[in-house]
Length: 377
Image (cartoon, rainbow, N blue to C red):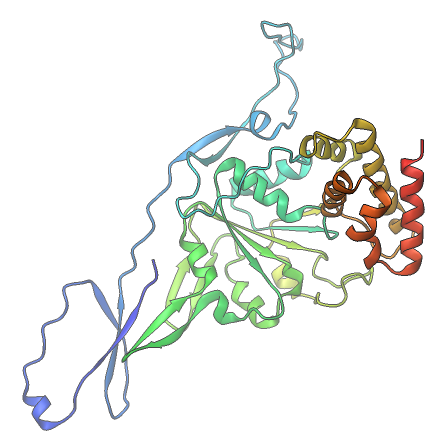
């Protein structure tokens, strides 16, 4: 709940001086500032009401995320079998919450989502240890989706802050505003996210952050003393112990070697980069997992059609890595293309409106040829 600061007018005339002062209000208030202007004003800040705590719960990694951790064994190292003669998978539990975030910030579960095993396990480790995390990867590798789908399964809330060119320090921490004859401090999105229990704060496109906003995050990104300093109100806002901070970026904050992200991304202060306890490099899903995802999301597609779609996307990515194409295609492009292909019935026609028309002429021609070969019998 936002704290407020009220400014009460105190008259300075002789008549006003002889008047009996009004009794203090019953609500808990704390005087924090007194003006020396001719018309004296006293600022007061109401005591904050903390959000209610959330009930924790345990979730099995294998049961929740479908990640294989091995199989149970007896003392001799032989696999244990269940009643049906199948191997019993190992299970390890992680913390989450019994119910979704009451503020409505828990993402919706995408049942077709395929979790990358290693990266998912590392993020779960970071959540358990309270590490600040950085996920680096090409556009469309699913950096944000991975975080939101982990949050959806564990009932975390998500506060996603996009660091576009317009976001300011005031957007993050808040600012004083005039309301009638009083002044009120309106907290920014970062402060609210810090206070809401069970929230994963996503710093999206972190490598595009301005210097002004970067220094706001300098202290919060420290694991041991990750407090947010509000100089405007002389407050120190601690990160709720149930919360986490995860940044996503196309580069590692030290410049772009590919040229794809040079417009918008910035070289970041290494002292801030050094505050991330875990850094992941996320790649595109394996073709088998992408086929499973497409087949689950679009059951009307045949196995052969799913294979052709994924083969074309994968070949385009390989051409990008070999320097034959200037930009890769993402899982977002694949999903959009599959959807339009179902409606149009022609892979080339659907691709034209999904991504071919935005490509340079040479890339357009190369990609169209790849699609034709992928769908040829």
